[in-house]
Image 1 (tube, rainbow, N blue to C red):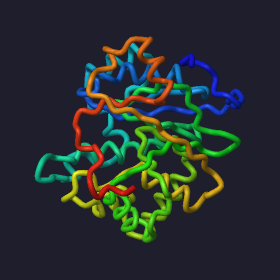
Image 2 (cartoon, helix red, strand yellow; image 1 turned 30 degrees about the vertical axis):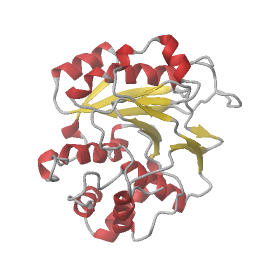
Image 3 (cartoon, rainbow, N blue to C red; image 1 turned 90 degrees about the vertical axis):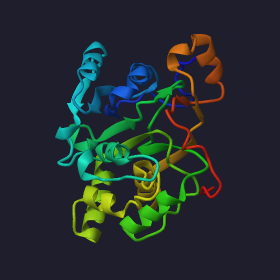
Length: 275
């Protein structure tokens, strides 16, 4: 398989999308490769690639070098990491939750109807499309964490019904559907959607909320004919993207769509994770 080959059976796409990547300086080892992989493997016209970050001269310099737009995260939401106060026994998760809220707030940064969010540690190694015949393509895996579904029910009052998990490190958001999700949360909890998420997230859990799981299950519940589900085929790696040769990427692309260079191992599937 040639990495940049056009996906079989897919016509050339004309709908332009913007891209949002939340990042911090710890992501600088992977972020350049993430940006390059988007331009190579996303088969849509791409408008802006926006890197949302705390103030950082190093990330700003990378954005200039890669022709991306730097966005100070303080412009995106009226709250900061200090407002969240998400401390578990092991570590502070306030920044982790803030990044998810930034992704959901990303629609305010783009004039396009659709914007793609991708984690700053995930590179694409196969061609990707996110819209087929007017339907959004969701890349899914077979397991998740039960805390995500408990928080979903707290926020929306119903159980999620998807048989697969939408947590795949990247997702295309439709701003119209996302706005409806936020309105439903606000109407139910009588407060801003981000405050409701912060309040309802289990602070005793290491991972109490998922933006991808929440949006994906909402779309499935309210727009069942508007989505296409494909396997994410993501590979986790503890090495670095700089160590990968072109030959290795071509070989990995026979089996996987993307590679994630996680900094920690907490995400490994454990007993009790929802199948």
